[in-house]
Image (cartoon, helix red, strand yellow):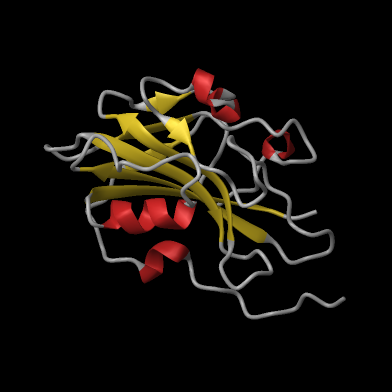
Length: 175
């Protein structure tokens, strides 16, 4: 099957503009290729992430990884962590493997593949290069009052109304 299709816009281009935060990683470089250890066929381990520059009034964070280039009408959610405490400024490599390793009251929502954890990059073999968009949103509430069964789309819809700032780091991967 030929998967040729138009490239979707970067997902943050479709959202209201927010003040910028910094989102960095010792494992990822913005605009570069994802290390295969963070891919599903590799070690499937979540990358280290750090954020800074949250505005005054930040009470919590929403963190995610989204593939807008997946061959679906709605992209593919690889990772969503809600209710990260405002004191959190980073996650170590591998902390996305289960709720037990997340700080405080933070927890995972189910990825589009059904995991309550980080789900590494897994573009279809032979498909075009995919972008993996890691995003941190500073929120004006400590909790989005979601349940683990709620979707990442619901988290981002709910979070949009509480977002104070956003940090983005985009990497690519192709099999």
